[in-house]
Image 1 (cartoon, rainbow, N blue to C red):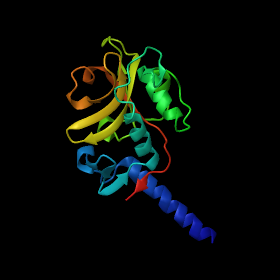
Image 2 (cartoon, rainbow, N blue to C red):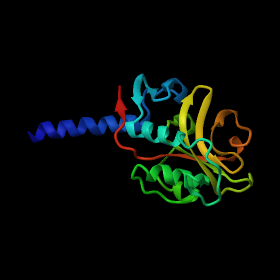
Image 3 (tube, rainbow, N blue to C red):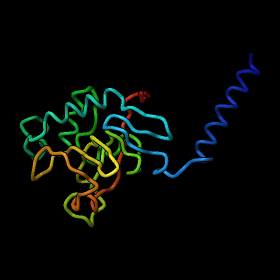
Image 4 (cartoon, rainbow, N blue to C red):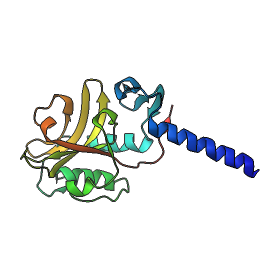
Length: 186
């Protein structure tokens, strides 16, 4: 029995080493393609969004048009981090109240790896700053679009396309993936 467990553990370890070293991996563009708003194909495997992500995004969209309110954390008015804080809190996720604090949660992901539910962090108005000043949540990823929902200081809660935004592209700092639980596979 111990010999079988040892061989099994050795196989798992070998598989982990291979995946970290990237043996036989294609480029991200070759291994990632989007099939719909609720699933992504990674290396020919469809990865469906965790159910909770779909529920969070659907709930967040109910607040489209809500006005911007500095330091706002309620449906009467949100600032960017207050919006994310409120939405996540409605699902029992206790996160930081500030954009900079939110950026400390989760694991960093590349733009090419973004999925619905990921958070995107941006500089504020000053593009020469390296400080996080804005946050939004990815709601859809397509080959020509990364759609994210956020509370804009000039427009309130809106959905924008990052890939076509002359305002947000130069302000992008990083993206983070929160742990919503185990990913579902179709």
